[in-house]
Length: 415
Ligand SMILES: *Cc1c(COP(=O)(O)O)cnc(C)c1O
Image 1 (tube, protein in one colour):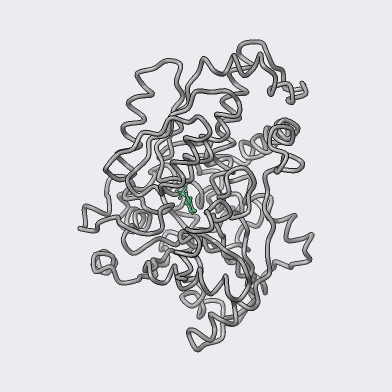
Image 2 (cartoon, rainbow, N blue to C red; image 1 turned 180 degrees about the vertical axis):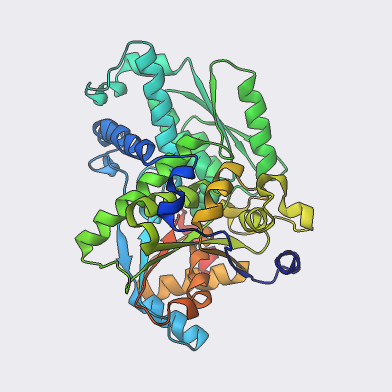
């Protein structure tokens, strides 16, 4: 296949999905339902008073991010490529999400909260109509301290699971891959989280974490490669977009389709968001995934139909990228099978371009994001011809950045 040769060569590629289908034709064939997403949204509302209490920076305890209109960045990209791009450009600010500073604040925190609720309800300590602020009391912290939560991570998932679990009182172990940044490990250790480091990549960290957890009946493993709960937490974010854009007066219709560019690692984050968007907008939204040229695991899995049965190493790639949130060699099979029919297309981006976009965004709009979060910008010129006769609402999903320490930022910005 040509696409495999292109991926091997590490050239940037643009792939449109031949399996794409109308949403209403496939909605009830998917392994996940809208009812489950609604239930997840309700659960997050039950926990909001608790989160507001223990993380005052989360304000009302609803972890949500704004959308920024970024016309100056659009002009920069148009100058850069020497062509006009149709529509208006917006940035979804998951870099600003409270508590964990990345998109992982959606899935990761949701899964930990659900686990805590299940344990407390099963033990007769909590009912759904209680005031969840009581979870901050000593009885609960003592109760949760008997249990362990574990996760394998390239960094951001570890931050989100670690911070939330430690706050509830759980013992928590994060298995970190070699590409995880030192400041992320330091931050976790400062919160009492056990961090185990591996010289290998993300898949190894996940495998070791899973093994450790399976041997301990008191331990729950947050399985980034298979978790439905992570996916549901992300899906809530996609579903909420509709009311958010309506409040901003942004119109989405046939003439103004919503075109969304999502950075993809193992696939749960962008897959969940894309599914939530489809639930709200059906065929009026089209989603694209963005991956580094060194780690295009989801694109490889989708284009070959092999999903998690093939890794980027199998085609000779090294899975080494500065986009630590995307440094994943093998995709989730569960998510790949959902995306088979939902995803409009996918593309890759070279690392040096991540830094160019990151810097341009900082200079034009005064917004700092981390390298992974800049991957979506590459889509704007790739999809240009497809939307040239329309006025699309172009939305780049920024996935992280606000926790990055100042000295790391200047390194990324090259000054
Ligand atoms: C994890 C992450 C992603 C991708 O999410 P996946 O669920 O791994 O696909 C994108 N950007 C950042 C900053 C991340 O941390």
